[in-house]
Image (cartoon, rainbow, N blue to C red; front, side, top):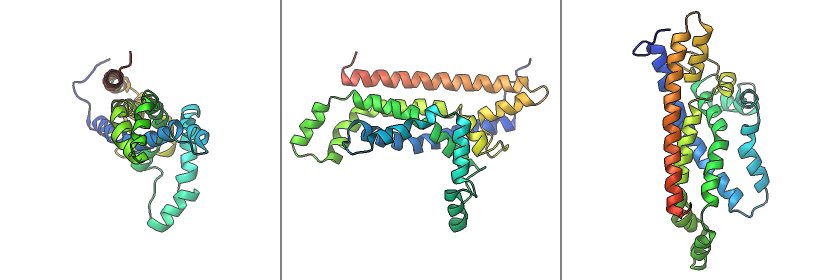
Length: 234
């Protein structure tokens, strides 16, 4: 098995698309993870259990089922997808938008768990003290909660980005495997393995995926260590 020095153009396309999709998916999922974690951990509003279940549902469903549900809802024949297409001419399924949405949905539970752990580690006495001094809930969150959990939020972004690079099942169902448009790194590995003599390309792409995953995990662990240090945790 040979390992060429540089990937060819389609492989670079898959790598660039994977990095772009991962960044956009994190940008979508991170605010949802922070807001959902705050509702579950701090809010006293009814329905917290429902929010918690929705945040973690993609974690327990097979990715293919998640992709199918997204296709049913957001495909051109689905209720939401048909509405978007008929009013705005916007087609989501089998486009790069579908790759981003499917990836964001799949990484949301991982990011929500990380932000929830960061939020639970904060001493609530600090927030209570700010409230007794007249701070509004928004002021408490912006000046106390968010700065203290910032390393945990960044760790969630790092682990979410890493997980996004490996998403396969939901993406291939909702976005298909279109070269140059929806073929991400995992789909490129899958495609290479289907082609005769594609083992070399698959191994090369797998090596890139492993390096990116290790870098993401190392960054996440470093940020978690910073969070523990900031909060005085062992």
